[in-house]
Length: 128
Image (cartoon, rainbow, N blue to C red; front, side, top):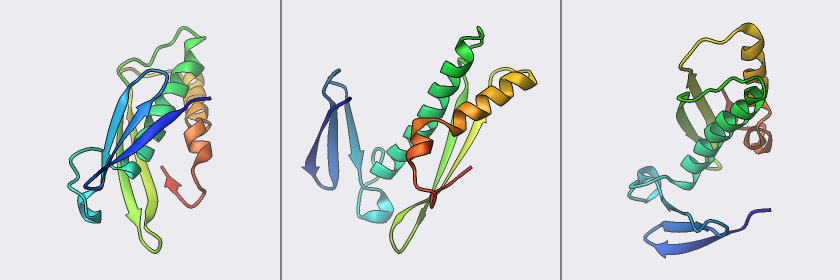
């Protein structure tokens, strides 16, 4: 179990502290929702968490076969919906540094769809 402390700093900003490590993340409301958009918004963090989780779980899944995915990149695009305001779509494009055989590709794809963040997001959020 992990614990975090989140403080509202004013001006639509928060700081989140990971209590085990002391690491700190700041958020800012986006420009299209009364903020300055100077750092990640909370919804940006959700999309970032999905991509980070996918990469991590894929790495775990292939590591036992002596395969590493170091350098793999994820480009993320978030689409917001209204009524209610929410994340309606998350597009993630993965770029690998090498080509993998068919078996490895299947393992990577299954891992991506089974990462905990993907499994935690509402069915209403389109994930591509």
